[in-house]
Image (cartoon, rainbow, N blue to C red):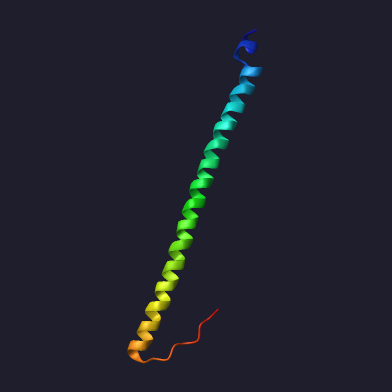
Length: 74
């Protein structure tokens, strides 16, 4: 009797708790995924903008110093 009273409860309440925890975790993961996707889009836009700015500044530097541009590595 003692072992039975100490044993973890079984039945629908444990299953329901596990299911609700799974739903909660899934919702949190979906929110995190949306947030990370939005942050990734912003990061991509910033990198693209920095690339354009870098190109503009390099061209201005070469023009100002009359230095022929180096061939671009691709």
